[in-house]
Image (tube, rainbow, N blue to C red; front, side, top):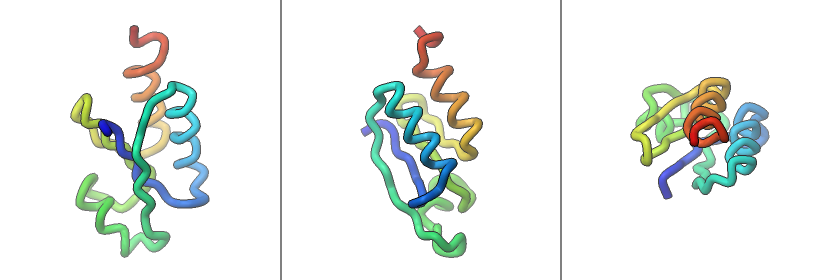
Length: 83
């Protein structure tokens, strides 16, 4: 799998990313994170911070947080205008 999404159950920002990934018909793997920030060590190891969502796209060598930035990245990299 080239894309991994670190997400939290019930997180509306994470769900926006999931919706866009599905709209773009992109495969991805979800890694569910702990609700408590202090326990999100796995996310911190990957991205340097504990906020979710975090997308790791091995195809382009990209790791990023913040839903708005991730949505922009997905549209630019995989949307209709990327062709």
